[in-house]
Image 1 (cartoon, rainbow, N blue to C red):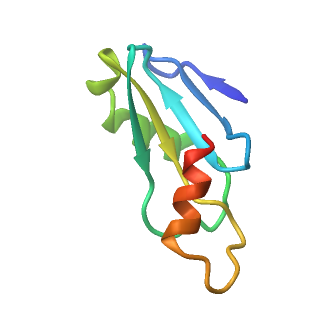
Image 2 (cartoon, rainbow, N blue to C red):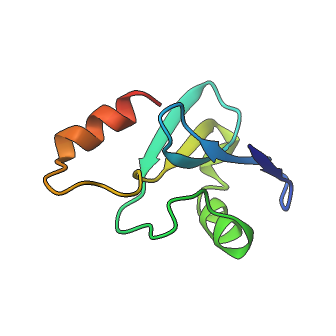
Length: 92
């Protein structure tokens, strides 16, 4: 797990229990989970410029919510369905 303090909001990056890369920011009691769309070729949590850009998009929401930005797992086998992906996300 990595913490970055580039802004007033603390941003924590890491992997879920089942290996999904994510970052978390905010400390509100209500939770928002954002499922990243599109390919993530590195299959690791964002860092540096990429993390700053992504987290800046959620800065206002992070004042009232805890936000999880989650990517899909890497190396998906042929035939891996959205149902399989939803099972992955349910473990977070």
